[in-house]
Length: 400
Image (cartoon, rainbow, N blue to C red; front, side, top):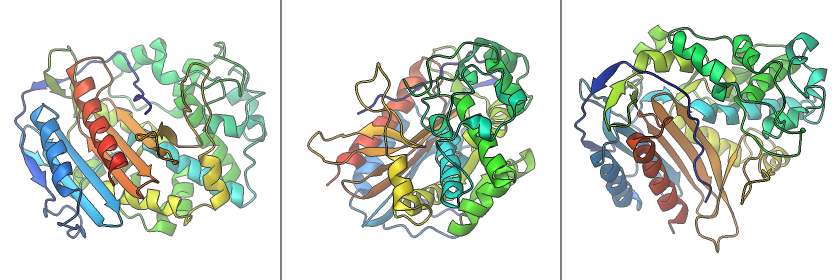
């Protein structure tokens, strides 16, 4: 199974907190909706509750874990959404999903392709103006598909030291996509397009602009018309402001700065960053909406079977031991080496949170995880949150 991907920016934070946690199994508390149709006799119930409690007891601040398969839906809420006031995670909680948003962006592109509005193998210069792409190395050679599978050779602005320093000095400034992409201008490419793999948020920034150009509409409108409205995903949000974040009851977000096991409340800065992620990471949703989106995608309800197969056409980096990425899907491989099918989905990471959604073809199961503690620097919480995700993914992927 592929190791989890980490981005290690230089960061800072606000208020140190100690945290006591509890386990809340399939809470019936309601935020913005009725009780979920949970199967309280779900065969995964005891193991999922055990695993969530295990990692909450080890110090994870709070988490929601949701599974859906032929046995129905089951939810485990553990720890606290807001440690200071001991507000628990609940079934309907809305939270940032970070880079899981990339899967949504790819699906909008594929739907435009199916309508004849977008050619995945066209050069991006067909859709983007010279003033935008000419300062980017090899931009005249890069195709839309290479943006989608991270084989463009483009740098990633989020790991550029100049970008990190700018964010450090402007922690409460929401950066425009134009400002972000400028941090990779006039710098050499990592490799020739199509010859290797490198995960690039900058590539997905350009992909958002390609989608907007092909559709002739802002991405927010494309997302609504192509995904959210057809699937009736009424608890999925894009472009939220601070008032909406408060009204929707987002969790607080926490981070370990000093590698000393102490977490700090970084909610304000975290939300400032998240609001600026847009197409490559700016969606917020509740867990059920994420699973409903994945289920519709896998079942061919939102793109064709041919498009879904393109999403599962994997690229592999020269230094990788297994495939890395498809179109909007991360490759997670076979947890059981005898299985004929591979597990896939997408992770997401923010300053003070981490998420993941996976689909396991071998047992037709969907898993969604959201945790309100970040893991973007080496320290105890890098391993606490990652270990929790790995344990849950392994259990669900090998369940029979």
